[in-house]
Length: 323
Image 1: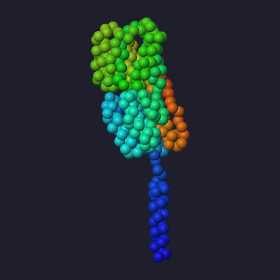
Image 2 (image 1 turned 180 degrees about the vertical axis):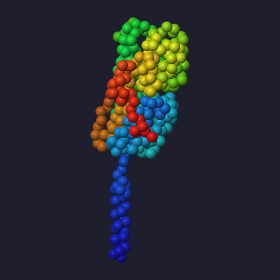
Image 3 (image 1 turned 30 degrees about the horizontal axis):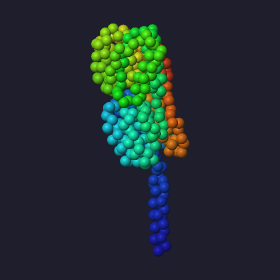
Image 4 (image 1 turned 120 degrees about the vertical axis):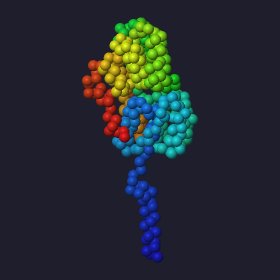
């Protein structure tokens, strides 16, 4: 009997010990990071920043996003699947500013904290908003294009996609600056690229054909910028049309160096991904992060490409963090 009691007591202690420390493994929280899509370099850089934060802060990162930034229903499905898994927190870049009210209600009901990053929402049911100050970035783009045109001329704008709060804010900032500060510049046409490089190229072609002799171009997001650059090159307008692009890819940097693009307004998506995860870890550890974290964009010209800090911004070491 004495031996049996010892065995039972030992088993009970082993079970309790395993429950307390997961049989020798410390419990790691899981943070879901849900971008607008996974197809563009911007989101890959966000992913890398989130992974670094996970390593630094001892949490697991669950990365999942739709293939297209305009697949709003797929994003909601992914969010709901993460809620069903009871992840410890979610960082979401909203594809549509008005589409997430119901998913956020479901997350709140289960006490799952949510940080919104990159693109804002109409609801206030979130922990923190982490993003580039897009309105100010749009104003920066307007100021640079106006300087390139000496304050006068006709321009076209290649928009991103309806409902995308981040690009809408920078487009509004661009328009605001042009109207208030640069009355000699007139926007003669604008079209959506629909977050698709081929569609953005076609939109730019249409705008250039409808407005011969236009002096300037602004594109408000990565796919619009890539498509617009391709259209400008196809029409032999490199160096003849002043072009301010938004975001950065290898091809956009090449076009900046080659003269098709005059300036890039570059964000820091790596830092956005890192900060989004860090706010959720703060919450899980009992701290209260700020309601809003604004990050500054950087205007990059050809002459800036030799600067080490600009090189690090434009070419984050993705291989170090992503498979």
